[in-house]
Amino acid sequence: MAGMTNVRIDELLDYIRSGRIMDAMHEFYADDVVMTEPAYGDTNGLAANLEREQKFVDSVAEFRGFEAPRVAKGDDFSIYENVMDWVGTDGKDYHVEQVVVAQWRDGKIFHERFYYAS
Image (cartoon, rainbow, N blue to C red; front, side, top):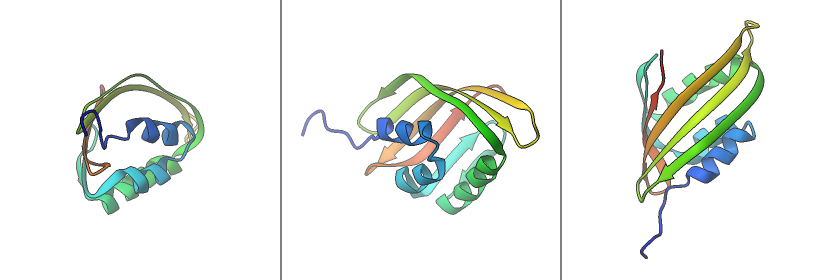
């Protein structure tokens, strides 16, 4: 049907806003996902990305905020700008502003790329 999309970006962002980052990984990412970040390069496969993401979650002492003020989507892609703030287990304050571009297939992300100053 015209206008239908399998891009579930609004649901994904709701998971992240509510702190359900690991649940989001299981729900919205394909087994063969490739995630690309300036700081890490490519991480291939859901298992490797789950491990990487868990390390991030474990490094957060206090999550202070997540905003996605601009979101765009098509039939097989999403783009959103976000701002995140947290306190790390090292006691430091972190502030990240990034753009995330994702390709979707059958309601799951199979490629996601993050753009931010590293």
